[in-house]
Image: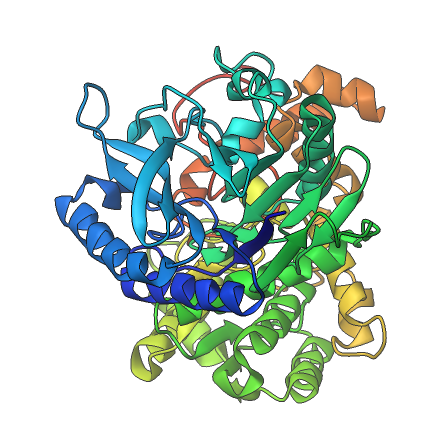
Amino acid sequence: MTRFFIAQNNYIVGDFQLNAQKIIDSIGEAKQKNCSLIVTSELALLGYPPKDLLYYSSLLEESQQALELILPKTKGVTLLLGCVRKNVDKGNSLYNSCAIIQDGKLIDYYDKWLLPTYDVFNETRYFSPGKEVKVIDHDGQKIALTICEDLWHDQLDGLYEKNPLSEIASHQPDVLVNLSASPFELHKLYKRINLCKEISRKLNCPILFCNQVGGNDSLIFDGYSFVCDSKNLLSFAKGFDEDSIVYDSEEAQTQPIASYLNPQQIYNALVLGLRDYFHKQNFSKALVGLSGGIDSALVATLAARAIGPENVRVISMPSRYSSKHSVEDAKKLAESLSVELLEIPIETVHQSYLDLLEGPFKGLEENVTEENIQSRIRGMILMACSNKWGHLVISCGNKSEMAMGYATLYGDLTGGLAAISDLTKTQVYEVSKWINFDREIIPKSIIEKPPSAELKPNQKDSDSLPDYEILDQIIIDYVEEHIEPEAIAQKNKLDLELVKSVVKKIHLSEYKRRQAPIGLKVTQKAFSNGWQLPIVHSHHQDKNP
């Protein structure tokens, strides 16, 4: 019987030398463990997603050179290698492929059939769809090949006309292999496992699912490669880390499906996303504006975990409206995390702006303008320190604030990466409480105090926003589930005018979000990647709630 090796690696898009070496190392490990067939993830040699890098001809040349390095290492084994290849026929010039390599020779390719164009995916922009299935013979076993989306036909309500699994079924395979690059989102792991169990039932064979791991821009790949049959999970790789699986049907044992807490999964995903965003771009130091509030506290905690507290600096920038307890909470958190804290009061700078603008603003009442001046002063200070020290600023806005426009352009939206922009305020609290599950890391006083921007006297978020439990449910229903306002109001027993007012603010704030830093995606619909609405339109804005 075939002994399989599933290589769950963290690749860097376009780094062929590094990626090829990881694959070569996996081949070596597979040989040591007496495995004769090695499975990689989707586009392993290139890294996923490559986006418009695919338009450059040099990419194909480099890919071929890397492939030539790998070929001699496959003596005595079979390698199923995710890669890109040229399409010499009509249509887009490339295929998303699996190279079939046996005993040092490139034997054939399987080309991905189903090319997703929804949410974060845009594969028909680059690739042509495959035309035939591939079922290879290995040690007397029939092994069917698929790539990522090829498994999902039945879950997508007739999105695709062709179903590769239907044709594969006629070959009666002994094993089905899937090379995948499936991004993390909450609950996606269990969807994958349940899907593969159902496919296993239909095909009457085990499913080997190899997923990429690591962060690439806003997408986080969680790994969790696995082997399953129609009833059981037979082998399971780690999440959010490189790992491998050795699968032998004669040695396989049933494994329980772990039950992961949502806050724990979000935390692990964000730590990985932050770490890879820094390391893969050769950034080493992070800078966070620390207000004493829950959002910046969580971001600083994630950064310290991701790249080490010695590589994180935080700056407290109190104004006349900053409460004493917020300043103290910022100090407590910095001590708890062992990160360097610098305090730069902004009172004199703030007053100088007010004096400067006293003439132009004469006769006009104070409003959000004066509040935003403070935020923009802080943004300028952060960026000045970023330039001088070479630190990357991490923005602290959450999804609830981003939805409502409760953020200041060129102020608290400043940064090179938005760490928690796909977490609602409710989720921010959930993750923060989970972090403290065995000891207090984020001061309890930060978690318990009412949220406030502290840009005017006695300010609370609740002064201008609905309660977060209500607001966040509306945001999830409208942004992630695409439910109409009337249905949201009915579903949640809410006032329709309240729902409409939230929806209107979501759309009015689109221009701000377009100028915000890239954010890490953890839900099924993130503003920074997947949400694609026009800035200028009148849908759901034609009435004044």
